[in-house]
Structure formats: C-alpha cells, structure tokens
Amino acid sequence: MATNTSAEDTKPAAAINPAIDPFSYLGMVFNVDGSITREHGLLSTRTTFDPSLSPVFIEDITFNTSNNTGVRLYIHRKALESTASNELLPVFIYFHGGGFIVGSPASPVYHDFCSLMAVDVPVLIVSVDYRLGPEHRLPAAYLDCVEALQWIKTLPHEWLAKFGDLSNCYIMGASAGGNIAYHIPAFLKDVDTSPLKIKGMILIQPFFGGTKRSESELKLVNDKVLPLNVSDIMWDLSLPVGADRDHEYCNVMVESELGACDWIKKLGWGVMVQGCNGDPLLDREMEMVKLMQDKGIEVVSKFDEVGCHAIEVLDPSNAKALCLAIKDFISPVA
Image (cartoon, rainbow, N blue to C red):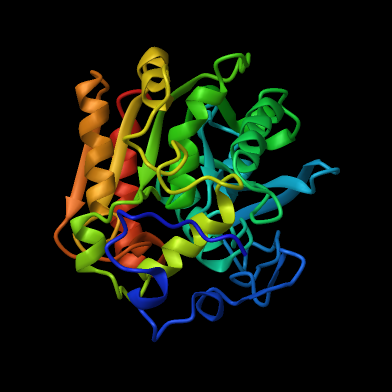
C-alpha cells in the first residue's frame, strides 16, 4: 500500500493511535493485489413497499450497469396516496459518507436518515450509490454523482415524473458525501443539467484534510468515531495515486484557478453547513465556511457545542433537529 507522508505531519500515522487498527475499525481487509475486502460494508437494508413496516417507499435503480452504480429513491407514502394535492416535492440528491471507501445508500445509518428526511422535511430523495476507492479512486465518485444528476433530469422514474419538482432541487452530502457535494459544481461547468435546477447545497460535517494537522484534529486524535489514523487511511485509499493530503480534493484551502468554491459562487447556490465542536474536522469545516463567505457566497452555518462526527446518523434526536434546520433552509424557496 502506498502511504502519503509529509514533513508537516506532527506524528507518524503508526504513532497517532497505535491502539486502533484502522482496517479492523472499518471492517476491511487489505489484499496483496491492492484491493480491499469489506467484511461488513456498514451492512445493508432491503427495499420495502409494506406500509406497515415503514412510512416511506423506497426503490433501488441501477443507472450504469458497467460501473454498477445507481440510486435509492425515497418518498413518503402519503405523497403517493394523495390524489387531492398537486404540490410537488423538492428533490434532494444525497451523497452518503464513508470516507470514499466504505458505505452505500443501503447502509442502515444512511438509509434510516434518508427515510427520516423523506417524512420530516418532506422531500423526494435520490441517494446515490457511487464507486469506492481504492478500486476506483477520486475523481470517480465525483463523476458518478454528476452522471446521477444527468440521469435524474431525464425523469427516468414515475416518482420523479409525478411527484418531484425538478425546479427545486438541492444536493446534500454527509462527511465524504459533503466533500462530493462541495466539489460537484466544478464538474458541472460543461454539463447541461436542465431542466434540473439546483438551488443550493447542504453540507453535513464535510470530509476535508491536509498534510498539516489542524488543532481540532490534534485535540481529537483518538476520537471514537473518526480517529486520525482512520481518516488518514481513508485519504490514502481514495486520493489519486501519488497525491498527498494537500491535493485540492482533500484540502479545501488548495484550489486551482476557478476551483469548486468559485463555481459555487458562479452558480449562485445558497449553502447550509452543519458541524459540531466534537468533530475532528471542525477546523477544516470552519475554514471552508470562511472561504465561501470571503467569495461572497451566502452561507448558513451552525456549529453545535456538543456532538461528534456523523452525529446526525448516530443520534435520532439530532437527526430530527437537523431535519427542522433543513426545512427552514429550503422553506423560502420550497
């Protein structure tokens, strides 16, 4: 395995937290051919159409058989049952977390959160199943998510055609998914997404890094949810071969000319950012917010005093509160 190192690292990865084996922590085995075996893959859940089991209907669809990529659609059953109302639902395109190397829309934590949003906001959700590293390193995930947007605009499913408002769309991502959402605008520069109209993005504890450790990373080096050596492995297995953590995909402060932040500004999107003081990524997220504000982007940000990374999928009460905040964010245009 190729390991990214830098003289700016304050501690070697092996010494950061020797008590935690990052591969065991992630449920992965590293193979001699450079691939990884995911022993549990954050588990999976099956689709259901039984209202007695769930108030949400879901369906899995593959849009690229060659890459085995697809989406999981979520809609509140009340939307399907209502014949009196012609009100369309906002469409959320959701990108799950997992450090670009584990997870899928079927992972229970993401599945449960999307199910809750479909009811509590409410919205029609398209959760994207993108390719993972190290088998498919970045920008593969970004390209898959752009392809998903192009697929959605064709109204390929009855739920989207009958109940989705393509003029009122948002992209949303958690952790690595937040990173994807942030970078997507730069990949849309030559893409016609009409009639899909994206009005903004929602970034939940977006996953960024850098070769120089931040104060929040060092303070929470042995964090129970996202230990620093686990974060390092995620970047090691997802960045382009030969890239370190100061690549623009990872370090929000390293941008090429007309980078992601500039494209967010050009597109005129509003941005919501959610984080907390118990997240090792806090400093990275605050840097991102300041960068966007300095560019003149309208940002609604909230950093809670308590919490941890991925709190919105680990704590149902936090998930409920986040749904209320999301509802407030989109309400002026919903």
